[in-house]
Amino acid sequence: MIAGVLAAQAASYALWTSQVRASQLEQLDELSSNMAFSIASTMRFFRSLPVDYRHIVLDQLRSMGGTRFFVSVNERRIPVEDIGSGPEKEVVVDNVRAILTQQLSIDDVVVEFSRPETLRVFNNEVLLYDLPPRWGQHSLLMEPLSPPILVVQLELAPDTWLYVATLLGVPDIFSGYRWLSEERLLVGVLVLLSVLALSLLGITSVTRPLARLSKAARQLGDDLDSPPLKESGPKEVAATAVAFNRMQRRIREQIDERERLFSAISHDLKTPITRLRLRAEMLDDPVQRERFCASLDELSELVKGALASAKGLDLHEEPQPTDLNALVLEIAEALRLHGGEVSLCGNVLPLTVKPLALKRCLANLLENAVFYGQKATVTLEEQAGIVTLRIHDNGPGIPDAQLYRVFSPFVRLEVSRSRYTGGSGLGLGIARHIARAHGGDIVLSNHSEGGLVATLTLPRQTSITGL
Image (cartoon, rainbow, N blue to C red):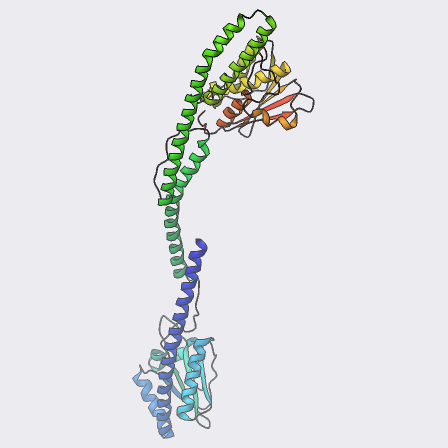
């Protein structure tokens, strides 16, 4: 936009400049032509006078003062420090020389421009400023300006030169054209600032709804209960906001319907599972009874896991400062009662999180570490506003091809789902969902010295989306 405004201003200035120059050249052409005809008339007048009367006429002209020309008759051509260049001077000089040559049939016409302070008007080299004011200063000086003086010298006769000096009435004929004059620069800056200010207001009014839409789209996967977007702004953006709100509403309705469906299924399955368990306990064969109960436990775990996957991630609570060290120690104490060993290294300042959700995340990670490795080492550290919690167990690790797959629902590398091992393969998926809802993530890797390392990262300052 800045480039466009500058290009438009440059184009308008170029067009305006060409018009001004053309108008100025046209004005100079007309002035110089009129001046040349007047000088030709003056030349014919002095030609018609007897030689002895020429000086009398000149004295009378100087005594009257205020004439348009300063005229003198000299014995030789007076040297003039010629100044100026460019098309303006060429127009004046060519016009005056051409008209005088045509009107007077004289080939030797000298046309020059001089500064007032260096102009000499007589054979004795007298400067213009040395003359009495009524002689020439009234007609050749324009105080406080100092325009160039046009000097025309023509040979009346051998050793007799007519000297004519006059002003064109264009004081800045040789001042040149400045592109970056103070006035034009000020106008250009004001126009540029005005366009940018108005453009900024317009762009802001357009992009603000887009920013809200972008933020809502980022949070949609984690917080379906966020308030609907304002359906305002440009027509296209408002229509997009309407479609987005309708999509969010339909997704929320589908999620609610899914939760109701799984709740109904789990409720309906609990009754026959309970009846089957009662009948299994009445079996006489202990082996068959054990196998039957194991199958029922597996079925019960699948039902619970499906229900947890549908609605177990929604822990509605307010974020608050939480001591991660105390939270890890609390979980470690509970695991110690079941034979697990967890050690803690490092310390970080309290972090604003949803405490129950984060406790569930850490519990799932530590329970897996203790289950597969019996012992786990937790390391806490913070760097550049990122809190990192590493859990290193003494287990067998996970094949590299399975490191990402274990986060999928119902995936367990320990294939049994007996009443002794338990688990439905949902713990890691739920833990990673909670971490990402806090703006962090969980990454699994195999340690070089054996065992699995689960790395949980949490930013210190982030907007926590709904869980």
